[in-house]
Length: 157
Image (cartoon, rainbow, N blue to C red):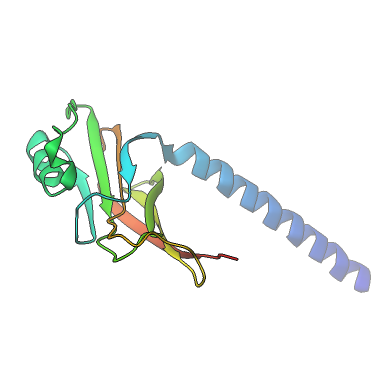
C-alpha cells in the first residue's frame, strides 16, 4: 500500500515538473520580441497611463505629453510597427520604476506584462520629482491587447 502511494507521488511530481517545463517552453514560443525606444525616470508625464500607439497622430499626442517633446518623436513605419508606452505617474522622489517585461501572444489577444517597482524602507532615493516610463516598439499587432501589472518593493539594506 505504501509503495503504491509513494509511486503515485513520484509520478505526480514528475508530471508536475514536465507540465511546468512545457508551460515555460510554450511561453517562450509565444513571446513577441520588442525593442526599447526610450526608458527612464524623468518623462514629465505626471499621470499613470498605458498606451498602444498604432499611428503617427497617436505617437505625436503621447510624445507631446512628455518633457521629451522638445525632441521630435521617433520616425516609425506604423504599417508594420506598434508602439507600447507605459508611464507610472509622478512621485516626489526617485527610486520608482516601470518596465515592460514581456509581450505574450495568446490565442485571442496579446498580453503586455509590466512590472512596477517601489523603493523599500531604508532605500536611498533622489530628492527630485520623478516620472518613470518605458516605451517600446514591436511588430504590428492586430489583436486586442491587455496589460498585466505586478508590483514589487525593492529591499534595501
